[in-house]
Image (cartoon, rainbow, N blue to C red; front, top):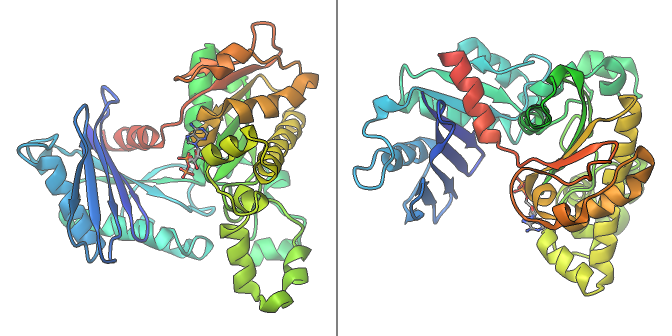
Length: 398
Ligand code: ADP
């Protein structure tokens, strides 16, 4: 089957056409600045050069129209006709407690996604705009919703409840949900395949370290804890997000230098993390590593703080699972930063972890970076959220 994977944001739309049999991406691209001046679509057919076109996209319907044009273009497209696209898989950020796995989209599913949109007001409505635009452009083509939160729905109550009045959960559904679930599921399953042991028999910690970063504990094939919470602000120190802080910081800052709640939340989401810690040097680890290597104090502070938080979470998840067989690093930083991996792992000798420095320094694909005598297998497993979405979509539409 040929599956179109759509990841729709409020002003952007990422797409990829995947052959579900070969699991190859036939082409991928991005529409940017939808509804804003200077809209651009770029499309890269597999093995060919990227094509960039500046075309006005007043709304997502126009963007989908251009995606279809790009995919079916007689010269540079990757399918002859729209009818070759068998199904569409949509990334949906928040499924609340309503969705524990991917589902075929129908009117009832759309209503249920709308119902939990309060929990992700920036993301879910944008995701649904993408669904509706595809339904309009491709009537009759089956569509699937794949949720960032679904994989984490197996967390037990003790992990997902905050220490708050229980009525806050009952009335408002305030609890921990977790995100990046598609990636945590894909990487933990892939790790079991690489190790050659049943998924249901392993204790795995997945460190998804990108601009947004989260970590999860997967025990016997089920997620039992993850670092993001009600929103993606909780947990690790991220590119620009604070991660865990004392909630009283918010009240303490309120009114200082004229700050109101909106300013403070904006600071926690957009000016904090390694960006804020470094003294606004950068949120990009390539810049921070360059600074660290030159002895820059801000860059060093940010990288050490980031790595320390990851180490603490790994330690706590090893405790939560009563052991750990495998630790996986994935996403932009996890896949590409030997420095961060080594700073994290060097503190975990008490778990019997032995880092293979040479393997850690090799840039490449899937690989083991622990020594053969390490008590825990440590791996780099590049994530592939689009492929995971395509697999679920194919399975539900076959
Ligand atoms: P997201 O999907 O959350 O935007 P990614 O998983 O794409 O994030 O990760 C992006 C981050 O990965 C960048 O901000 C950058 O810090 C980091 N990164 C990418 N390449 C490298 C590299 N070679 N070395 C260190 N960090 C890198």
